[in-house]
Every structure is written in structure tokens, then in C-alpha cells.
Image (cartoon, rainbow over all chains, first blue to last red; front, side, top):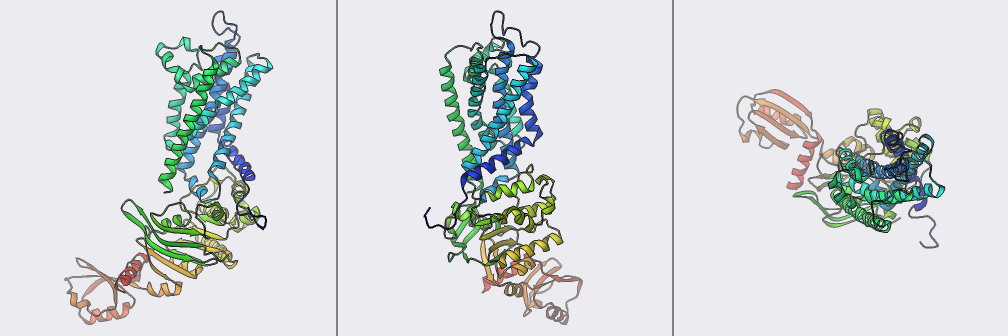
Length: 267
Length: 298
């Protein structure tokens, strides 16, 4: 911009991002169907499944309790749930109501919009694991060291990143009516098959073949490792690499789905 | 400021085999108030979408303030009301107005935008709790909150009650008086007449007239004469009558004329026996058809 410009020709991006972030966060949190399920559901699963056996060893002879294992599982389940369901369904709904039409006519850059959406979901995800952690510590007496708590939180948040891409992709690929069904149909079974609800060793044999290719399985190894629970084998470096690969793949898928949608509407 | 607000040069847009906009060239100068008038499916919305860069032309070029319409510098100078667009229901009116204000370099104060739309009492309501007319007024607040140089309004008064419409038209007239460029589409000639200095009539993707409201009105001032007959009428009975159009289906005759008295007097004199006679103002649809015919004959 020239030094002689008396008036900005476009609005500054940071205040725009701040306002958009606030709007996206408020939109998420004011829909009880979303905020309650994403913030309360992981704690509720913990209450139903983890509470009674929290102090038991994960399996005979294990030094890790079922409570610690299940806390890590539900933390991952919760953050990924926010991304996949929150994004998938809210984006599909917004498209269904043609909210993207008016936005498109404004000088709001698409990257600002998507960054704001991702940040708002990350905040909701963080609230969800905080609530879960407090519940597990207070109600079930799950005890972790300070470094285990922080490693778990950091890894769970990092593991949510590929699911941001997946959520975006689902939001642009599915319609407002099919989005809840499609996302649940994909998300719940893969969470189960990845061993988030019961350790893989208790699940049918064919799942052992599929599980290593599921992103939640790779994320699970990372969060279990952070609380000292045994992983399914292999080094966690491999799991990190898999997660990085899923991140790239899902974001490319999201970009493709977004372009496809834009091409249909605005060409 | 000397750049025209909108410049379309030989712009065509096809959807499949439909020519929605067909080789249109037009210029809207800064400060003009222009109504784009036409029946449903005439290409009004497509024209607006092209001006806003929300659709890409198949051929020709569109400039907005001399820039590509997709350029954020151009988009920062406009405000838009679109048909059928949605806004997030879970935001409060003042929250979404603030959000939209943040998109623009020199926005109006929030209270001013809300007041112009007449939404002071609803400022704290959730958007989803607004009525249809209030929704429409919210769109006005969002269109003006960036303090735009040009406003694009696609059928802005659809769904408004009489009072809402009157108030809305007054606000737009005021904005225009303060030097804003206004481009609106409508299928109400009265609306175009009240607001605009210039009316562009389009049909089948073509500009068929571009003139002052008064000039347009004189051309669509026709009346519709409809009656039934007991016998088939010979073509010669209609010879030398001041008719804009004539449709005969079985025994039902539909005429469009600017001079119904002469037509009826002459038909009676020629001995035509008619019953179920109706004389009514032509609806715009018929007026457009008549105008298109006139264009073809001219």
C-alpha cells in the first residue's frame, strides 16, 4: 500500500479473524445439540463404562488402570468428535441454508473464515477434554502425574488436527440432511474398531487387520502412550508419521471438496 | 471516483443450453440509481451475480469500480442483498452486524446500520427469531453496514409488508440522495418508478429497453381486452386496429392495446358479438412480451 493512501482499501485481517472466531464459537456453543454432545458425551461415556472399573488394572497383571486407559481414549474420542461432527454437520447445514452465498459477496477471505472455524472448534475440543479430565480425576480418582496430564492434553489436541480436515471434507461432500447420518456412520464404528471403547485384544480378529489403517487407531496409540498404557506395538514415531499423512490427505480432500462445491455454485 | 461503478462489455452467460445473459453491454456510472426490471427467469439475478463476481461470464468482461469484481478492494466498496441467502440463526442481530462491519475498511457505526434498517428493538434478538420482513431488514443492515459506495439489491422487497416496503424504499431513496450508486432488480414497475432514474428492462437475457421510468411506463401502459365469441372470427375483423398483440384460442380472444376504447368501439361497429368481456391493466409479463415484439419490429 502506498504511503500516501488516505484510506485503507480493505479491512485489516486480524480484527476480522477475531470477530469471525467469536461468531463461529458462539454459533457452536449456542446449539445445545452440538455443545452438550461434544462437551458432555465423553464424560458420560466415562461415567457409564469407566467409572465402575476405573481402579482395576487394564488387564490382569497390567500396571495401568482401566481408568487411565479410558480417560485417554475418551479424550481422543471427544476432540475428534468435535471436529468431525461439529464441522461436518454445521458446515453442511450452513451450506443448506445458503449462508455461504451472502458471505461470498463480502470481502471476507476464505482462509480467514476457515481459520476462525478451526480455532473455534479447537477451543470447544479443549473445553471437552478439560471437563473430561476433571470428571475422571474427581469422580473416578484417576491419578496421573502433571507431565502425563499435559502430555495427554497436548497429544489429544494435536491428534484432532487431521480430523479438522476430515470434518471440512464431510461438510462439503454431504448434504444438510445426510450429514448427521454419514458422519455418525463413519465416526462411531471407526472409534470402536480403533479400540477406543475396549482394548483391541477383546475385539474380533478381523478388526486387528483393519485397525492399523484407521486414523483414530494411530491417535489412540499416542494418547495411550502419554498415560503409560501399552500401545498395540510399534514405535510411536510411526504413529506420528501416520497422523501427519492423514492430516495432509484429509486437508487435500477438504480442499478438493470445497473447490468442487464452489465450482458448482459460483461458476 | 471517475470509474464507472459497473461496466459490462459483451457479457454472455450460459447454463447448459440456456442463455441466461446474452451479449449484454451496459455501464452504470457512480451515483446512478438503476432498476433492472424483468419477468421471472429473465436473467436479472444472473446479471447481478456477474456484476458481483459470483458467477464467471462465458465471454465478455465485467468490471466493478474498474477492478475485477472478485478483487477484495472492489468488494470492500459494495453492499449486497441477495435473494434466498441465509444468515446464521444463532447469532444476535447486533453480533452479526458487528461481524459484517469487521469485513469493511470504513464501516458505519453499529447503531446507525441497525437504525437504518429499523431493527433497534430487535438488536438483541437471535436472528432465528426474526420474522420474514425483519430478516429482509437485517439483510439491509448487513448491506449498508460497510458504508458502501454501491448497493446491489436483488429483489429486496420480496416478503415485506406494505409498511415495511414503504419504509425500505424511503431508506434506499435517502442513500441514493447521499450519492450512493444503487442497482436493484425488481418485477414491480412502481418500485422502479419510485426509486430509479434509469430502468433497464431485460428479458431472455437481452436488454430490451434502457430508458427513464417515464419512457418505460408509456410503453407498457397497455390494457388487456379479453372476451369470448360464439363463432370463429376472421382475421380481417382485426385489421387496422391499434393492437400490441392478439391471441385467439378457440372462442377466447385476448388482445393487448394502448387504446382499448377505440378497439372495442371498432369491434362493435364491425358486428362482433362478444360475451364475458373483461378489460384490465396488462400485467408486466404481457407488457414485456409486447415490448419484445416492438423491439423485433423496430
